[in-house]
Image (cartoon, rainbow, N blue to C red; front, side, top):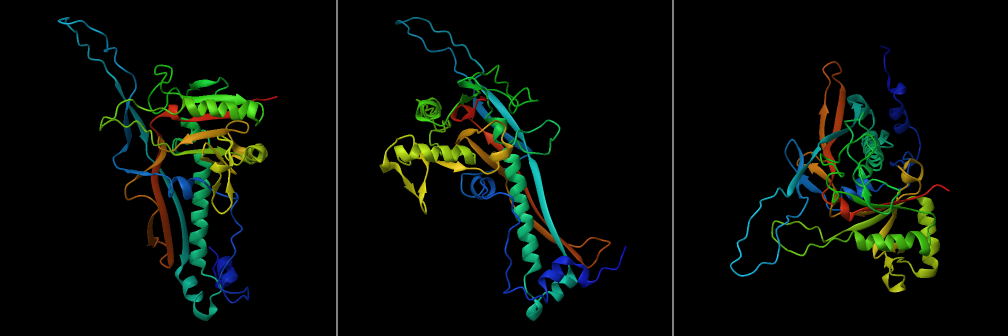
Length: 352
């Protein structure tokens, strides 16, 4: 192995004794304009912390055939039925890392420091982590990539038929252990559209908004009906632009079509029935279908993180054969979970 000098270490040469301005660097490395998953799904929207060897949830998947009108003194037979089913989601693990040589840090300090190379490398590792998580969250999982999480398209699947027809992802025969063909209530709402217009997509979204708004008639303490929804509508750039065109005549809230429902967050935010319409750059070129519109209920769909293992940093670790080298690791154990597929919908543009 060639002898490594300080001049050969690109980060060190760039960050030390070269007059590049004040001690800061400008980050132009990221590939997408904005990221939804790590900044919002994991930090802002509700995230449950769990433990155990995997994620399990119990669903009440059907109703008993028990209620009937009776007369006085009429005998009543009690038939006990299995109403519950369990969904099982495995943990997945993600690692990002960076390293440095001790002498780099010694050389890159006090009057010689132009940028902090360790901060730059840590920032790069975290941005790379955000990109990998963003890609996985919006991608259809594959059976030949078992290490990857079950992202949104795994739970909210496309179908050309209008209604609750969201079944399984390509290559899968079930969703978290349950077969939607056996349990029709275990399906998300689907459909296609030809244009982002009042007569087409907006009308279908209004119908979907009514259809996926499930409200339980009972309020038992142990019954999670998930009625406190937190909807967000996710679209690509072209579809967002079409919604902007529609909003010019309707007001910024497309669902209500009234100016009073405009939400201001540093400017005007497009919304549908007061739910924000969010542009996801990854969907521009990598979507599972053409110009998808995801109506996601984040009270039923969310990331689940293993307690104590969310962005856990380990190090510095010294490899046995490189005593002056320090390695840092940032790790997370998580997966995505949807406890009620019926409260979610997806549309996509049908081919001309």
